Structure formats: structure tokens, C-alpha cells
Length: 264
Image 1 (cartoon, rainbow, N blue to C red):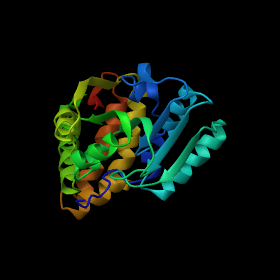
Image 2 (image 1 turned 60 degrees about the horizontal axis):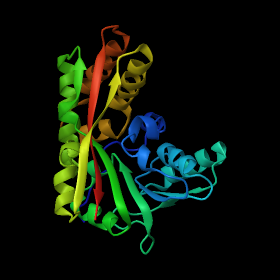
Image 3 (image 1 turned 90 degrees about the vertical axis):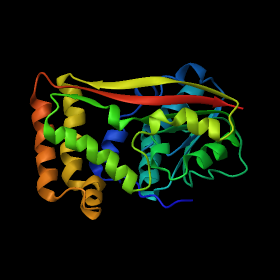
């Protein structure tokens, strides 16, 4: 498969942000279909918060397996499940293109995964072989709306898309899920959008503070430096812009995601 670098990395600011995800805020489109006793495979499970939430929803007769390429974040997820007292979930290091070969599930779920893969159609084809239903949701960075949109925050949006492309992925994957699923051979593809909105003091702090940190310390900083997309001074200005946005009572942001429910 085409080589891909994980754009976000696993800096503490990234892992903490990803650990705030739940079924309600990141997979609401799937929630009505989750039933007790189901077997679910969560590909790219990260720190495991969505995975653990799914495990609670399928109950003691169900089973959820989270797979991630990073041993570090898998260890984090295992500790989170232990702390939560959820014992019908397991986390394994695995390959998104060939997760748990030979096993079958009711659902394969993937949140913010396909944007990072060099061959998303191949991954969807593999997931199609694992379950009767594939549920995937991904961001559309180019459609992200920020107010006030300062030059620095506009530049942040441009850099995220450019860095994802340089790393072998696609920052606008959410808009392409339907076409990728059709190319992977699914007979039925249901699709729509979900959003995140950050406008309250708490919401602005969640998004703005993490990106102020990520702009200068995470794989975003390393990647934009390595590819010559931005230097340290520009990244510092972006971090300052996020801090200013967080403090601005007029600050408002909408993050658009596309999702699919693919069958057959």
C-alpha cells in the first residue's frame, strides 16, 4: 500500500483531544443501529473513547475490538478500558488494510481514518469483507468555517490540507467517502453530514487550546517543517491566533464531516 505518515501524531495534546470523542459527538449517525449482542470492529481506534462507548452500548453479550497501528495509543486505550471497568472490549495493534484477518463482525466502524490512508478504496474493500455494515466518518477540512477568520487561521486551514496531502492522505476525505465506497464495490451507500460546533467558552477552549499546542509541538509542527510548508515563526503566529480566537467571545467554528453507511 502507498506509504502514509500519520499527520496528527500522538503528542499529548492530540491524544487528549481524541479521547474526548464519544458515539454521541462523533458517531451519532451509527448510534441507532447499535444493538445489544453485536460484534463491532473499530478501525483506527486511537485512545479508545468511542470504542469503549460502543462496548457499553452492545452490552455484556456483545464484543468490540479496537485496532490501531500505534502500540503507544493501544496501551493508552487498554488503560482507559480498565479504568472504566468495561471488559467486553479489547484493543490490538493492527493494520487498517487487513484488520483481524479471518474474523467477522456485524459492523466495522472507522472515525477519521480514511483521510490518513493512501488507498482508502482498498481499505474499504477489506472492511467490506469483515462485516455486513461499514460505518465511516471523516472531516472535510476545506469546508471548516472559522469566525473571525484571521489570515493566520485561514493559513492553518490551508496547511492542514496541504500537510495531509504531502503525507499521502486526503484532508477532504469526508466529501469522497461515497465515491470511495462505490469504487470498493458496496451495493448500497447511505451518506450525509454531521458537524462539530465550537462557540461556547468551553468549546472554544477545547479546540483553540489544543491547536495552539499542536501548532508548535505536535506532528503538525514536525510535518510542516519537514515539508517546507511553514517555519517556526509562522507556526507561532498560528498558535497565537488560536489563543486569541479562544478568548474572543464572538469566536465561532463549524467542522463539517461526511459519513457513510455502506452495505453489500
